[in-house]
Length: 320
Length: 320
Image (cartoon, rainbow over all chains, first blue to last red; front, top):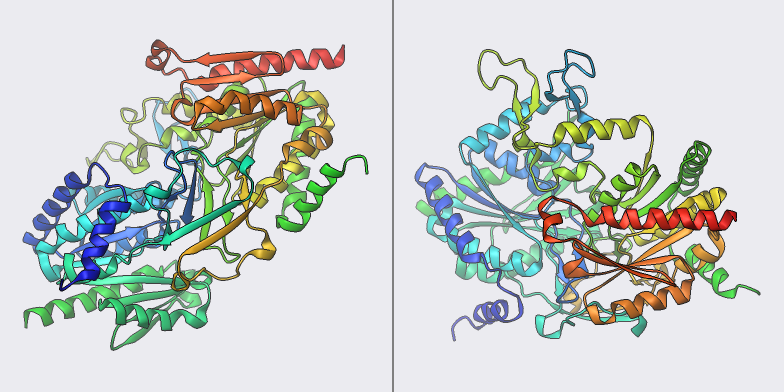
């Protein structure tokens, strides 16, 4: 009875959140990926990215979602790889993806053309118009290098249930590499859900009148992750608020509660130019200046640089 | 006081659903598009596609969503264009898009390569690997033709409010071309919402405990659309259920209530292979046989073929 809180979360996970059928297979894949890269002397980061779907019906027509394009997770993955990490990218299906994220704002067919145009010289080849996508050659080259060296392992989730079980599997898979593992929990995870046992099977009928929804609190998975599943890992959580006045207090309280290494705190409106990395001892503001924005510097580069240094110190301390 | 129901919906729209700032501009664009094509002898269809977002907070972190990839709307748009229609495509931001939908299941960077590979013959051109995307030349050619002839006008929405106001604007814009307009309302629209006046400004705090949500019924916009905004148009609504046993009854009741021309009725699990087109007088089952599926026939081709014939009859009857 030493850890009643943890075992109750484990129990809840098993009872109230459907286990995805492929979870064991994915866990083996992640464990193999982690030991392969750790043996090659690399650190491994698990990035979570995108929002979770919370179904309101078991044959789901409606669901609750959390706003997240997945931009922060996708760009951070690129900077971690540039810093020598291998990346497990646990992301919401169809959210932004490393490298591919450059296509977000365009219709791909607007960037393609027939080589030689409609003229007789037309080779039948379809080429990218590099005036529409000026960075394509650079990005494709980097994408192919990363694929070749197997530095990126993508895993998808849709629902909150899938996210929770896959994160647990990832934590267990990475526990074998100890302090060389980082968890970078950038996904926008729902705080509320409807247990499978209380969910209607069929589409809720609007003819029944206004909708009263009663949603339960999602178990705080950070607690068993830090204490039980991956106790030696370097763990970073994210805190997004819309009200800046409560942000730092909430970040400090999260560190007190879960005893992990850092919280990246940010406010919805300013999240692309300003974050605070909060640790038990320190508080670092990372800010993009106007000049940086002009030069297309991304704040994720700064966040990743801050955290990889901290991770190195953390590893040294564990060894010492 | 002849139409209290309609005016109350109009009033509700104005009061409880934020008006998008660009609605007048979009309305003019749609009106110009409609009259241009009607003068050229074309019919015009407004297709709605994808699910609506219903924010739970005014600075939105959480929202209710309706399951919809936008596949039916996007593929139907292509078949309507093939049938000589001009298409206004009112779709959820980042839902499936005509022609581009072929990229859905692949990572675009996996379909690109350097011409001549890494070899000295490398021209710097980035080309599509047509073994990965065997239909790309055909699709790109068709996409360019459609763009050239301006047969497709894309309009985006995110939230339920945007959808409702843009649909009203579309109905008013298309009212000038009378029975030549078709409405093909395939979007998955929420039945429930939280009025702006009852919405919290900031992110709902999980520290406040379980979430009790009380959502109001979304006004049935089909009613003023049919009676008031576009009374001469040919109007098709969609009915999606998970329970097949209530489907046809619900479709018939919708026709009785709104007095429009047809309901396309379908069940979540079988929607890609089976629909019923229900009109006041008829009921047509459209089914894909195994053979059709093997030949990659899409059920939207059958739906569009059924409805374009019915639209022609409708126009003839109006004139007679």
